[in-house]
Amino acid sequence: MTTTTRSRPSRITPQINNQLDMFDLLTLAEPITAPLSFTVDPYTPEEHHKACERWRIEHGNLGIWGKSHMWHCSGYDFGNNRTLAGGHPTVLMSADTRCDHYYPATCSCVGDLLYRMHCEGCGHVTGIHASENATVEEHLDHCWNGWRNLPTITRKGQDGPWKIPDDYPTEWQVDGAPVRTLRQPMGTRHVPGRSPFGGYDAGILSP
Image (cartoon, rainbow, N blue to C red):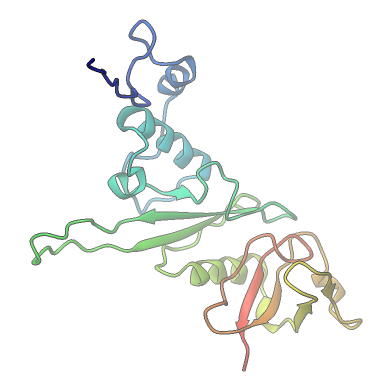
């Protein structure tokens, strides 16, 4: 007895009456402004998201970021790397400009994992950095000037309550404000939304 195995159709393969699904058709009908490739020009996160959706429909999901080099929010659905509180809600975007050419050894492709942050409150867009922390710090310098002078605070355990000193500046206890916390080496990433006020928890290397 011979068993025939059918391969599963891809996301863009017509599955019913040779038609894409309705959501894909609606997406294809929407105009896009951001390019379907890497760009240094600033676009809004929503413009980048629409461009990524267009790429997905036309080329599929497999290897989308490495092949397209497009700006996108980690998590794809804007669920991660985003702060929502206060007057400076932000989206941290990344673009993978690295190549996957391992042969020949003389490959001269140049690229890196790049970052850029968009403030949806005031419209500020950072420069392009090869460091996530450097990107966050440029944003904080613009939108939360003076954050570098804040005293560090601690919390009880990873998910425990924050310990905010009685003399902590009241003007920095507002929605969206960042905080500074002492960290150990290899654990100094600036974490979005983890501040007790909904902003960034900026990791400062412990002396």
